[in-house]
Length: 62
Image (cartoon, rainbow, N blue to C red):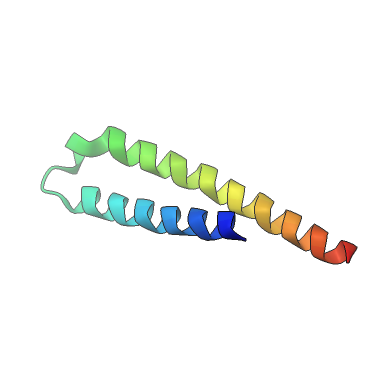
């Protein structure tokens, strides 16, 4: 549960980072940082899905 909570926190921060970069005067200057943040978000979303699936599986075993 703590791992999911931490990932959710990181996801929130990454989404805010993207908003900040995209709102800058010249967002193209930050294209690589935006791309990296978006890729990290996708990876963390997969992680959250796997954690949630495992939690459901463990709950069904009880």
